[in-house]
Image 1 (cartoon, rainbow, N blue to C red):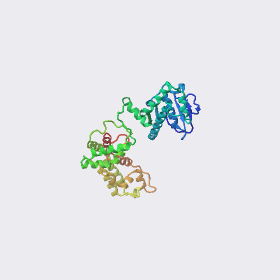
Image 2: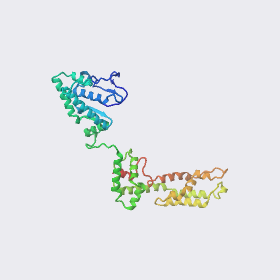
Image 3: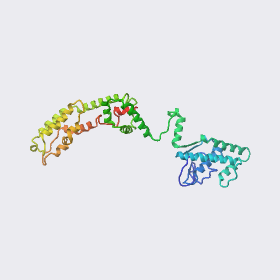
Image 4: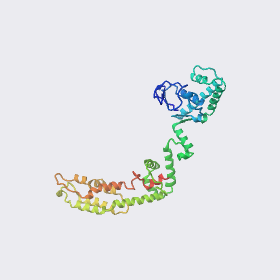
Length: 373
């Protein structure tokens, strides 16, 4: 039975789909029913009245098949404050009704629903039994199923733990961010503090603080990470990351020493610049830029390629950059394929494992290790 605020007080029959004026004393308590009510029209009072009828088993063809205990009647609302208020109002209503059925309260012209229920049970055994049901229900309100939607779902998961595969002692957490931060802080203390300085510096290149680690973990929450991913210590994950970086760089550098030589020979063959249709082309620049690229391709380690090449070299050594320094009216020229490949090489280098903090599909070893914690 849901406490719902809308515009008007009415009952909608699931069979006829016709709107009716709500009469709590003969409202059908079987099947699906919708009660629409705007603010201040007595929603809580109506729910309490219907609750009385369910406890009494009142209504014959309009009622439920038998009297119900509070634990068998689900009342769902939206806030915890509303559940407490609703439980208190229902308990008070049950107590007042029990006293009226026992003759301990006088006739109340302002409560026609209660008087109508009373008249349905003649004095004697029937009325005494009804009073007993009402009093018992009031005493059993601690077991009443008056819940918010999330609390009801949590209760069902706990009561059916075997069927749902959930733990018996699960706790509803409203803010997962606090748990992620705590887990990240624990991981940082247990795995980063014991590292040697050299290894710690590598970690700080990726995560300058715990907050950066939390951000990376959030970014991969929706990814399906294999259970075995990230196994071992952070030191071992660093070793795997280093090896991945070296493997990626080895593949990236393959052939670039030869390509750099070919690019340099082609550019030097364009000298003198003005005689070959160029506005500017200096031998010193060409040898410096391509010399840096060749040295990087020969190194076993990464090297500072981005800084050593410089912005001018990266822009000039592309088909677009070379076209910009062609003289006006100079004949069109076909550039070697290496000039077309250089922007791709730069992009792959910048996104190699040393720089990349997380990937679109598979997180790198260090992040896998953190997620497996």
